[in-house]
Length: 231
Image (tube, rainbow, N blue to C red; front, side, top):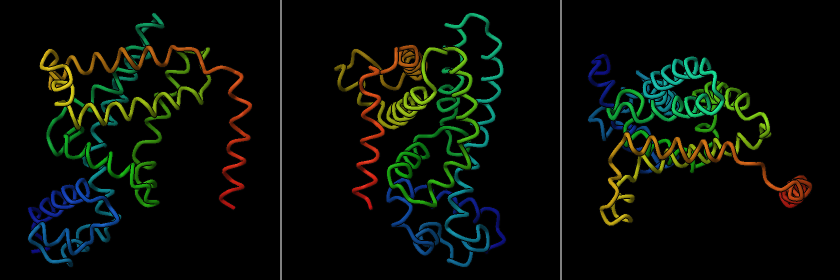
């Protein structure tokens, strides 16, 4: 049974479902095995550990998505006009998240929910996996944006990319909210329109001036106070 490749897929699917619903910490290998109709030994045979299982879930979804992002980014960087180049860079980041609605490549509402839950949980293992899968690609996008908006500090670009990620999660997970709040005048499930709205709002955010300089001296002091309280 443990050597059946279909069982491997069943375990991956079961783990993805449980992680996206209950988070990482609350789900045990036994829970996953029961959901998959397997025995716990099958899980450890295929994935060594729960950490290995989560890493494989991220790899099978995000490998294709990150590869497509980099392909689009290379093309976007060839655009000469700064405004058009920035729009192309943001679209290169956003588009692959919507391009696949399947459970096996790139997008998918269930995996997007899993990513949102994992990010919110703050688990150290999860954080390490997210960093391994996404940091290199994200750094490439931050560098490209920085060349297009040189007047904006890199740290501010990082903040605004963080906001983009939150918007991306929410747009993928709850499209019906747009339809409800607009009383049917907007269709939240219109993927093409959602992409363009997300690109437009992100470009505007990235081009905006940095926060008032008067606020900046307060930030190190605030962090120092937080560290003092923690100690």
